[in-house]
Length: 259
Image 1 (tube, rainbow, N blue to C red):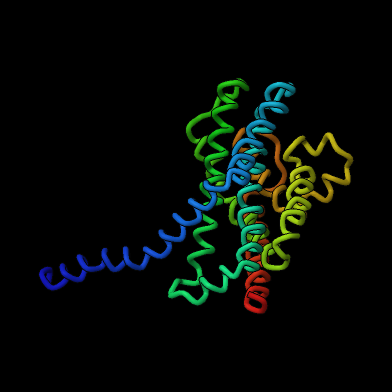
Image 2 (cartoon, rainbow, N blue to C red):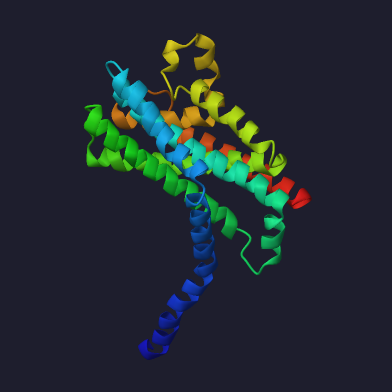
């Protein structure tokens, strides 16, 4: 029995590797395209860190370095997810690349998963940079479990934010996509309390905050650093997964119609 099953088990690994090869190739292509675009890479990596240095370290008082570390880990995931999906998808649609990939013998999910993995990697890298700055210059002390939890929240943020970016990129043209993404990117950061606590803003901002997915992401990050948060973890996860599913379904419906 063992001699009969050994060849099957040995042959399973190469077959799995062959099945994963298109996904790996797409991921490498996405990473090359991203790193060859300094106008995308540098703002995505540096803006959250520079803003945190300014508002969290230089101008921050009291618990500001700790609070903003949690929320900026979410803010750092916004640019690579929203712009990486929204603007790039719109460019691919208008340039015909999306149509070309559909004609290739390529798994339909490979480009989407590669772009999601790229956004996830950027989000984790930015969160790691923020934590390094917070510990070195902000006097923040982090336990290993807190580091892992913040990285996990940053990685998870790529899913709902990337879904929103995908929805935008599937509905607007390449020329309009950057403006539309900016109209979503900056207001969401402010309205979700990522730049400053919502308690410092009029009450209406706190009342409307549960409408924004970035607020729910912030509520996942804040308790990790013992900062006050609203709601439970399961509820926030369900909202975020639901919003992701709706955005993905709407984007898929649109792409099937217009390409």
